[in-house]
Image (tube, rainbow, N blue to C red; front, top):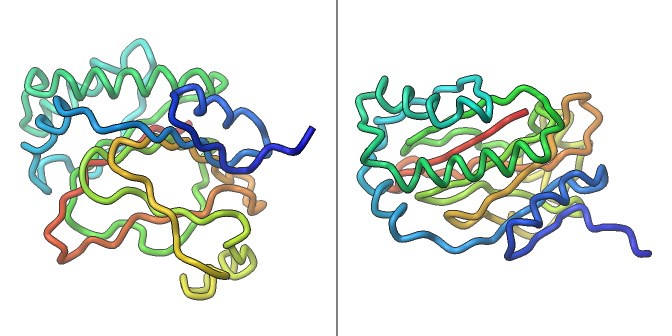
Length: 206
C-alpha cells in the first residue's frame, strides 16, 4: 500500500480524522461558506475580539465562547449560527485530540500576526478563518527545514513556488512540533496590514 501523503485534503468533514496518522501534518476540509454565518461575522469590527486564549472543554465550550463574547461587549444571541458552527468544529477536534487539554482563541484583526513561516509548539491546532484571507502553508517538499530552524527569512525557507492558502470557512487541523524535531506543518498568518481587510479567526489547540 502506498504511503499516505503528509497533506490530506478533501471536501468532506471526515478528512479531518486523517490527522491521527503520524505521517500526516495537515488535514484540510475544503468546505463552502455559509451565508448565515457570513452575515453574522460581517458585523464584527477589527478591534472587537482581542487576541484572547481561553482553556475550555467540550462540555463547557459553548458557555465559554458566550462568556468571551459578552466580556468583549458582544451579544452571543446575535451570533447563533456562528456559535453553532464553532461548537461543531470543537466536537470534531475533540475526536482527534486524544483527551488532551483544549484551548480556544477567537480573534478579529486588520493587522499582521505571524509573518514568518513557523512551526507551532502544540500537538494539534485547528484553524478556520471565517472572514478575510486564511492561513498560508507550505508543502513538505517546499520547506527548507534547516533554514526555518535557524531563523532564516521566508525567502530562504521556501525552496520553490508559492505558499498555499486556506480559503474562508475551510477547516485545517495542523500537526505541531512540541518536541522541536521539525516535522510539523510550516505555516504563517497572511500579511494584511494596510489592505483594509479584517480577519475573523477561530483556533483550537491541544
